[in-house]
Length: 212
Image (cartoon, rainbow, N blue to C red; front, side, top):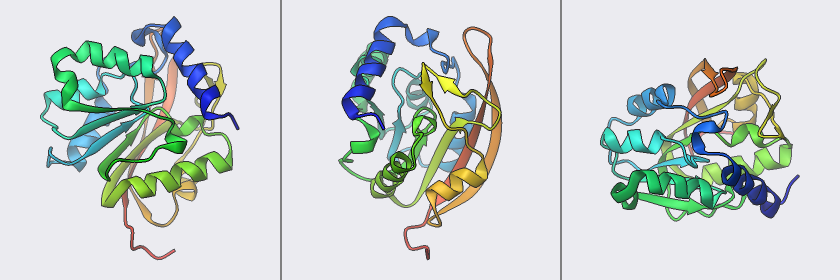
């Protein structure tokens, strides 16, 4: 299990040596995430956080379609700086958090949690347990949770790090009974180097009062 400092050094180096449109997970139009978010949150004033959002252009699209209470968390300050520079005068519309998700202390609770970048890098049971506890402490009752990971049969490593693939069985085992799975599907993402990667998307709702 890597320390926060080790994880931070890895991702800072990654973004210092590659531009955002060179990383394998880059999308010019994050269609799957946008569709899920817009369907789950017709009220665009709800509080939404993009976990591991880094330099992703998802935040640009969310601003464009009218979301007004947006946050992005990433362990890499350089990744977030790319996004801030790209957004220019729209950057102040977003709350930016440079933090390790495994030690994140939310300033308030969120109505929507989106993660297409972090969960599959958590390769130990302890890391995944920490993540889920922080997730539960960071969201409101009936919050929507969208997590996308490398799917079964997809990549086994990313950015020189081992990953853990997931399907609906493993993701729900990790999240536990307070989460209800609403929708799941696979997406075949084409990297900037034209390599196909299988992502699996899981859309859940959180019920704080659910029986264990």
